[in-house]
Length: 222
Image (cartoon, rainbow, N blue to C red; front, side, top):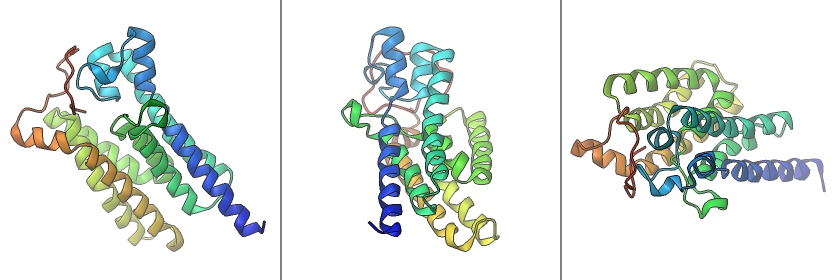
């Protein structure tokens, strides 16, 4: 096996590992351990930190948020540590988010990927991630819709990365891959939030702070 072929083989394995790591759904595991139920059958029906907040409270929700973000960051960190190059490094972030959304360990029924994307982008494009985080906080504090903040940020991040690339913040050989990876991640998040967008338009999307909810809501909120 040549050096180039070996590098691509390692890169492919890293991307696959990113998907498998992303497939560990901490929201499902935490609620199952604490309450003995499947988070996907209660509250909004979503396997994410916001639904854990509704169902199990702040502590478990914060833990789920940090662990879901951490697995996204871990995938990029592994790729960077192995020095596999910008292509696998970008793709491993996409793979981790996809794993969270369609986890192989949980019947391909996962969450909406926002926390995992945040962790991924924090290492992949830290300046853009910081700007996106600030934008998310502003939108959610203003409108009290986590889903709206997620949709706005998913749309904005590729544009922010592209703008930073044009300003010379990323090397020419990296800016295209970073922008493309962020666009794919943003697109996946938008796909997962289609039902939320419909409810936002209809005016019946649940706001942050409604408290715990016990009734399932198929295709539910963030």
